[in-house]
Amino acid sequence: MITLFEQLHLFGEYYYVKQKKIVQEILFCQRIFYSKFQKIEEPVTPLLIEQHLKGDFTIALPLLKERYTHYLVILYCGEQPQRFCALSHFILPKSHHKRYHLYQGKTPQEVTLFIDTPPLLLEEAQAQVEKISQTFAQYLPPSWKTLPSSSLPIEYNIVTIPYLPLSS
Picture 1 (cartoon, one colour):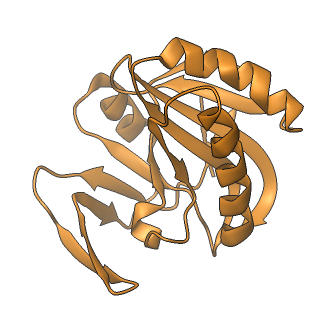
Picture 2 (picture 1 turned 90 degrees about the vertical axis):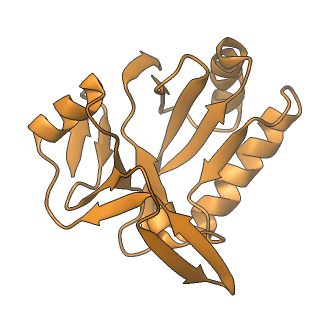
């Protein structure tokens, strides 16, 4: 595990670096996925994180380990990031999710919401994050994706290291 911003603990035994071109074709559930993220079989280091935060390159970390996760993730990219953050403070406590973290993405429109959870199997985590997503959809036009997802290959169940904590 690697700790980011003192409160986010992600799997760091290996990482992914975003490339400018497609580096892998993944056949999954009779579909082909094209990935620009190249897997690097080395632990993440503080220097790599620093280079990512400076914008030298983009690093992503796995969300799953042996089909289990500790986070439900909503990747918001829309026109109302402040409203999404405010809704997080309203919706999550009502749905019994007391520990969550909001982070700035690469642009001001990108917000990553990490919801702490006890270790959950992929399918159970997906069901929970979809339920939360449906609640958000009652208040905002859907401009996000949710992770983890069993409809995506493991190589797509990754999350880009966030850039800046917003609030919790």
